[in-house]
Structures are given as C-alpha cells and as structure tokens.
Amino acid sequence: MKALRKYIDKIKPNFEEGGKLHAFRSVFDGFETFLFVPNETSKTGVNIHDAIDSKRIMSFVVIALIPALLFGMFNVGYQNFMASGTEGTYLDMFIYGFLAVLPKIVVSYAVGLGIEFVVAQWKKEEIQEGFLVSGMLIPMIVPVNTPLWILAIAVAFSVIFAKEIFGGTGMNIFNPALITRAFLFFAYPTAMTGDDTVWVAQNSILGFGGQVPDTFTAATPLGEAAAGLAPTANFMDAVIGLIPGSIGETSVIAIALGAILLLWTGVASWKIMLSVFVGGALTGFLFESLEMTTLTWADQLVMGGFCFGAVFMATDPVTSARTEGGKYIYGFLIGVVAVMVRVLNPGYPEGMMLAILLMNMFAPTIDYCFVQSNINKRAKRALNK
Amino acid sequence: MGKLFSPENKAAFTNPLNLDNPVVVQVLGICSALAVTSQLEPAIVMGLSVTVITAFANVIISLLRKTIPNRIRIIVQLVVVAALVTIVSEVLKAFAYDVSVQLSVYVGLIITNCILMGRLEAFAMQNGPWASFLDGIGNGLGYAIILVIVGFVRELLGSGSLLGIQIVPDALYDLGYMNNGMMTMPAMSLIICGCVIWAHRAINDKK
Image (tube, rainbow over all chains, first blue to last red; front, side):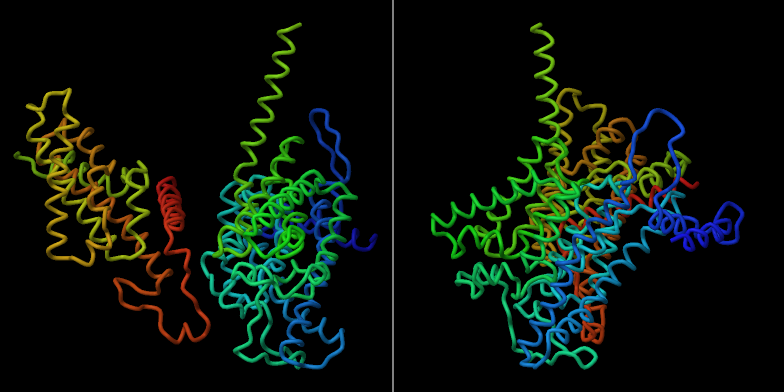
C-alpha cells in the first residue's frame, strides 16, 4: 500500500496544470480517489463526513454483486454443457461461463467508462463513479447470447441519454443499467427474447463447452408461463438457479448473499426491498387465486429478475424514493406492477424492468407528497398552539 | 412592391430556416414530427404539404387581414386553412395514394399544426402578401428540413433503407447486423429531435 501511495505521489505532478500528461488529469484523479480515500477536508462551512464516500459505497455494491456474477458464469457453462451433451467438470463449466461473460463485462466498462472519461475531460470535472456499478450490472441482466456490438450501442445510449444529459451521476431520473436493458429490449427484441434461443450460449469457446444444435430452444420459466404452460422449473430450481435466464438473475441464493451484505452495510434500504417482495407476493397471490396464471405467488418472487431487481435495482439510492415513508410505497408498487405486467401482458414475460423504470419516474412525486404532507402537519401543529 | 427582396423580406424567408426554426427553436409542430418520420418519403411529403399550405394560407390571410373582424379572426383563419388542407389531401389521394395512406390522419391534422396558426397570427395579420408568402415558404421549409433529418436517421437505422430502397447491404446483415427496432417507434424520434436541437444550439451558441 505504501509503495503504491509513493508511486502515485511521484507521478502526480505530470497530471497537474502544465504537466505533460495534463490531458489525462481526470483519469488520474479518478484512479487515485478510487484507490485511496481523498485526504482533503472541506474549507468552508461546517461539514461532517466519514470515509465512506460514493466510491466506497459503489465498491460495496460491486462486491455484493460478485456471488451472483460467479454463479451466473457457472450457470452459463452448465446450460451449454447440458444442451450440447458435453461431459465436463464443474471447473470446465465455470471456465466456459467465465470466457462467455468476460467480453460483455469488458465491453460494458470500456464503452461506459470511455464516455464518462471523455465527458469529465470535456466539462473539466472529476470522473463520476456511478458507472462502476452500472457497468457490472449491465452484463448481468442481459441474455448470454447478446451480441457485443449491440451491447456497446445500448451502453452508449444509456450513459449519454439516461445519465449525462441529466447532469451525470446522482442526477439521473432512471436507472442507467435498466435503460440499457430497455433499449436492448425495444430496439433489438429478437436478440433479447426472440424464439428462446438467446438464453443458452451456443458455441464452444477455446475448446471448452460444445456446439448446441441450431434447433435447440430453452425458454425461461416466465417465458413458459406467458405462453400459458406450466414452467418446467419448480420453486427449488429457481432458488438454486440452474435454469435459463439472464446471466446474473437466476440464483436466489447468490442474490441473497449480496442482499445480506448490502443490508448489513446499510447501503441498500431494507424498506424498499421488503416492500417490493410484499407487493409482488400479494399481487401474485391475487392472480393465483383468480387462476389467471400458472405460477404460484412464491414462484413470482423467485423466478426471472424479481429478486435481482428488488435487491440491486429498486434500491438504487439515486433513482428510488428518498423519504422514509415513500420508500414503502415506491417498493410496494414496483412489486405490484412487475407481477401485473407478467400476468396481464403475455407479450412481456418479465415485468421487473418496466416496473422499476415506471416507479423511477414516480419516485419524485411520491417524495413530494410525503414532504408536503409533513409540512402541512407541522404547519397545523404550529397554528393550533 | 418595388423591393421584392428587401432585407426584411429576405429575413422573413431565411430566419425560419435556421435561427428561428419553428421546430428546433420554437418547438412547434412536434407531434407531427414524431408521427410521420419513421420513413423518409412521408416525411418529405408532409414537409412539402405544410410548406404549401402555410405559404398560401399566409397569402390569403394577409390579403384579407384588413377586412377580418378582430373577434372572429381565428375562425376565419381556420376556414382558410381547412380549405387548403382539403385541397392538398385530395391532391395527395389522387397522385400519391400510398403516401397519403401512410400519412393517414396527419394530413388532416395539419389544420391544427401550431406552426400554421402561429404564422397566421404572428406574421400574416401584420404584413403584406409577398412578405407573408416568403415567411410561409421559409417556415414550411424550416419544418421540412427537420422532418427530413429525423426521417433520414430513423429510416436508415430503423429499416436499413432510404425512400424504400435498401441501403444497408445484405452482407452486413449476414455478419449479424440488425435493424434498430426502437428507431421505428415515436419515442426515438423525440430523442433524435432533441439531438438536432442540441446540435443546433451548440453550433449557434458558438457564433
């Protein structure tokens, strides 16, 4: 650590005003503050802050994502080996999945951070750290067969139009990772859900895995439910997660590990998480009682992206409701809308993305209502004195 | 009439093309810009129809401006515009049936186009017929330019073609290229309109 600090201090003058690498100032600054908490204090006013700045918070979320990511990689390999009938050890499956997923992570970070660096340099600001998490989330919420060039376009679209034009990290109305997915979903529907060939990687990579026949299809449980069939995967399959689906969303156990870390560190709000599940369960139970779907209320919670969305997307501190009471309503409605979209619109087997984006839009309104009612209450109290 | 191209008349024509563009500066006529621009051909036809209607409505209202009672001027303007729209609509049905089917109700809705009413109220009621004519042509073309830009981008990226002729080669599709389905949705034309406004402001702010 000491050696690293020394090295950074040594090369620092190159990036300051007049240094020969001044053009890369914001890049350097971004890396320095990523590695070390800035050793600066506020000069004006009275401020209290601890060492947990937004870079550290983002790092917690990335760490929380790792179980789901590793499991997702394994599952990618597992699905390919099963579909192609290849024999292999668990390690082979993991390596295959790793090789299949790694390019997506690289593309997502390269495009997203590239745009952030350019914008930061252009506006003469520090690099904003928001993409640290988005860049990790994006590869985890797409099907494994998403072509890389499409992913690159979608990432560029979302960083520019969902984030930078609103003023960058912390100013965005919608979750950038979900905008990426929404763009993919509407712009390239065949690459996202088309005829159920997108969920299982089809080619062997560097000798790992096998060639899956072109006619092979694998529907996600929700895809089957939307088609009116009973899903082949049962509740336990969905909890363990060895089922077709987007890369990071399949295993409830892996997501739960991340959720524990987020709740323990206080990064994510338990109020939002809890109320998403309550909303989804109640709505799922209602539709189950009305016999409008083949899924039980518990299936609704564990299948598809419900858990992943509830833990990592709905709790995004920037786009969610900020008032404490508002968080319950915000989360509850996400759960309700997600299950409603799933059941009532057979064209969209998965409703979590649309539900969260919709509620992102209403979060400021919810906050406004809570703040106003609080003001009114206090005003009344003051008048009645 | 001695000065057909006096500076004022010239300004009436050229301003709406750039600095006073009805779509990107005044942000009028957005609804139809979103609705008819998924292909280039209807965008061009729509742009020309609005140009013709604005120009002649401007001339007619400008000729009548001293006789129109102030309190019913909007109704008179609407009657004039409605008559012109009907003529254009019938002409389109006769000579460009396919396009008129594509444009469907949006030809009829030119009556309610804010650009038209805006020009009649703001310009034709105060100026002579020749200046009004130039102003109408200028505003119509200013509208048409934006429609063509948006239609160009949307048809090229959304359908891989221009004016119905395939531009993106089959070889590219074989490599895995896909048309962007979002470009065919109105939501994307709003974003492209926004980009045009962004570029327009960026260029003009520098001057």
